[in-house]
Image (cartoon, rainbow, N blue to C red; front, side, top):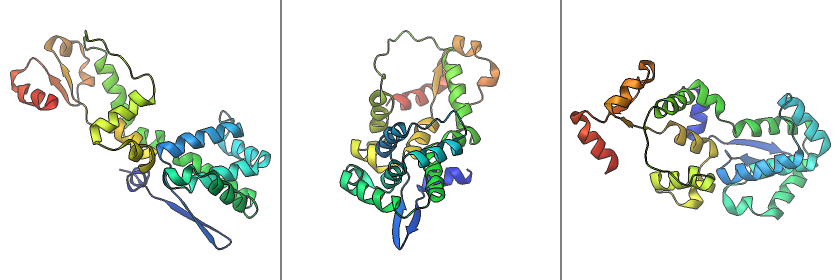
Amino acid sequence: MDSRGIDILLERRHEIEVEGRRFTLYPPSLGVTLMLKGGLELLGLDMAIDPVVAVISAVERDRLQCCRLVALWSCKGRDEAMESGLIEERASYLESRVESSELTTLLIELLSSTQVDDFLESSGIAREVERLRQVSSYKKNDTPTFGGKTLFGQQIDVVLQRYGWTLEYMVWGVSYAALTVLLADRVTQLILSEEERKRVPLHLLDGDVIDGDDPSNAQRIAEMFS
């Protein structure tokens, strides 16, 4: 696992010091990430252009809003993130003391901290997710599936059932990056009949795909559904 993966696993935090006052910057949780997304939308960042250019432009347009994002980044847990007075106090302090170049660097680091695509690609997780999608397309499924239209069904329900976490811990207690990697890299076993297996290209069957017609796999299949 590369350094990016280790940072995600350890939920490595950063500290900055501004005129004797220290701020701890925590890996954003799902809740903070959603709040940051709203704040970034208010800035109108055009990420279609060079991200650095976009951030520099945002800092020039609205320093205070940029400082609010850094202030939110320094919040740990729901209570701090939801305390508007705390956010404004920290944002005002930063706005009057941090140089534009330093604020630009902080925002670029903040954007990077909420992105895990590079790690999913470099670790091979993205390829496994795509392989699972392709193999699944060969499986006949006569069972209707409902729901999963929003974040509640796509992620929250899955995580709460799988790990037994509380809703508050999932949303506020674990980093969004770690949560994303956990969901993407979870061990998945796909049961295929002999007929389905024959239809799947051999290069897609290098992982853990179970032959559902093989009696020797009965115990493994029973354990999966126990």
